[in-house]
Length: 375
Image (cartoon, rainbow, N blue to C red; front, side, top):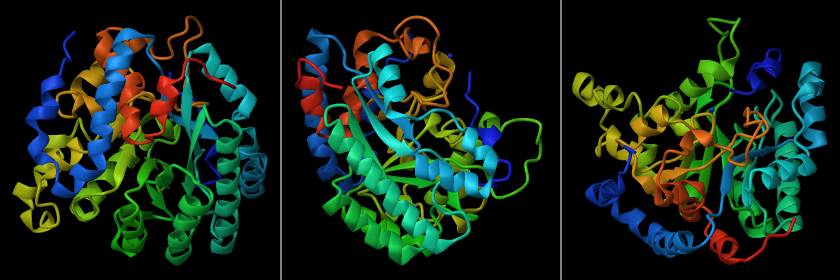
């Protein structure tokens, strides 16, 4: 991200048909053999959780909430003082929001723009510090928080090492990657060793957009309005046609904002195989098949227009609830953080609100089973 312009890009966004239970069964043949094993437990988990949800209050799990420690804020402000004005991401503020909207647990990830600001040594130090902080949040609130680690890309060797540290020592639940780092987009072959290591661990990977590596064509508008959605789309397309989705099928990929624009452009993206087949050789399953495998959260897209379109392609058990706290404009009244989804029937809403997240963070079954939660 261009840190000199970044602060204003973190401003918040503004809030009966899609019964697609059959899509999951119809598209089961699109899942690769290597995906069956890691998802087997999740499928069983989802069935048991859905039975629970049908006979008790639905649990709500926010898979897209950020943390922003003081030392990270200071590191950003050292590059650009305006970044010190990013919103309050304190744990107390997060828990207050969660309690108000009856959110039982949250999957925490570092607020963008990430740890690389031009100095690889500093990126390594900052990544380790942020990961230690994430682990402490998880330990301090074991019934409220899961947490994702960050990697010191573009340092590939250090990133591979950090994966092991996060999983084996810190016991984090997965990783947050960004759409690009210093102009190198996710899916670039230079980062294959990192994806190979994540694939070997069957890791959960959340991909967050950042400001693109070029001056904004329409600088009067904030980047979250359209640049962030298209950043996610660029990363997804590069992962498809660069061959990463085909090669690293054990990674459980999670993209925010219902994929940015990727699902809405699915057939256009897929048409590359017809119009420029020489560029599609690394994506033999076809773009639509890879898109169907992604987990997509509802942050900044919790409305019937966006979700209705997504459910035409995405299996219902791959849609998960997220707020994008503290950047989302949450409702000022009521206890539903996503009233735009209130049209959904109980079973579908229960899946999106909490059940489907069990495929990404399986220990959440214990959370759903618990009668009470502790702050």
